[in-house]
Image (cartoon, rainbow, N blue to C red; front, top):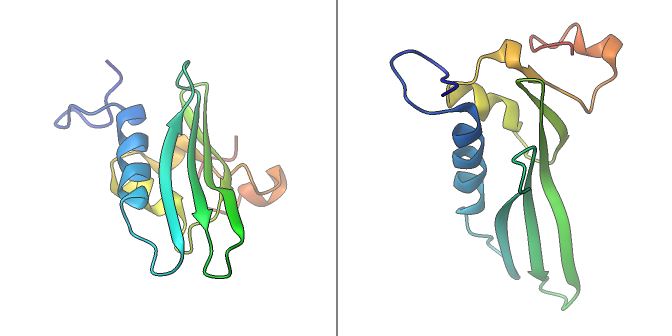
Length: 117
C-alpha cells in the first residue's frame, strides 16, 4: 500500500477523497445546492461537483475541483476553492513535492513550492 507517512496508514488516494468529501459536506448558505465527490473507476480523476438551483431559480452545475492522479502525483487541474485545495492536501499528509499545480504553466510552477511536474 502506498502510504503518506510511515505512522499513518492512509493512502494518498484515500486522503484525496477525504479532503474532497470534507469540502462536499460544507452546506451552501444560499439556493438549493449540493456538492458531491465523483471518482473515476480507475481512480485517476477526482471531481468535486456542485449542482442544484440558485435563489434566482437558475440551474447550477459546475466542477469546483478537478484532481488527477498521474505517475504517483496529484495534479490539480482546476481549483475553485478560495484557500486552495493544495493546502488541504498537504494538511492531509500528501507531501508538497507530490502535488502539481497543473492550472499554472510549467514555467510558473517552479516558483510555487509544489512539484513542477
